[in-house]
Length: 260
Image (tube, rainbow, N blue to C red; front, side, top):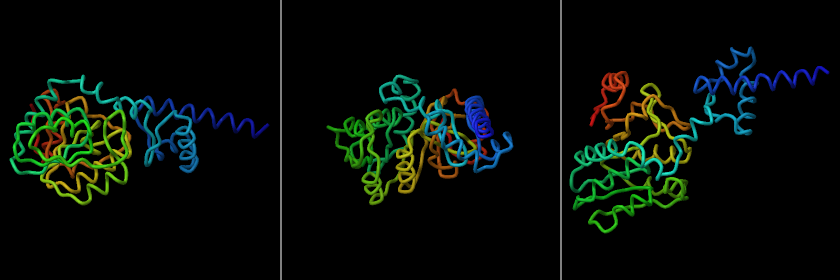
């Protein structure tokens, strides 16, 4: 009888944890342990079980709602339909930062795809990318395109995994335009896919300058997998709707910010 009651209590706690994560947008193991007067080991076990059931996303040190990991991982066609004018202005501003003869890294995404289109007029440029659609956008131009190999992610047309990573380790670039799904001025930039995040971190390592490119809707959002903290970002290009508190935080951090 006692075992049955314990099992019921465990399930009640886990249901409550799911509600808490959904209501708060995230939860840390230590705060859940305090809230439910349980050990951190028990909470970690709960989160693993809930993750396996598809009820939360398990992260290092806590959990995120399922919606935080899935909403932003829509296919590229859907993302291109969101904020198209803002992305065009961001792309135009990004192109002005590039000089003939430079090497440019573009990660996958709708904003970086717009940047690729804006770069088509350059005569002497090398573009490194893991996105097959970006390589296609630049075909027929005089731009040299280096496309990483790797495993194809169908919804983003991007190549990820060990082969893509090994390709990047052999290269150096002048500038990286990094599209992100979440931009938190406290914790940094993030993306929904773990393999994509790992590849993005390598892109940051090989680039002399890192410019985050994102429309204002991405600020204040945290996605599943962290890419890099704010200290790794040299500049940001975003639109005029960026919330004032986030703009202040960027300026306080000494990050060059272009609002277009």
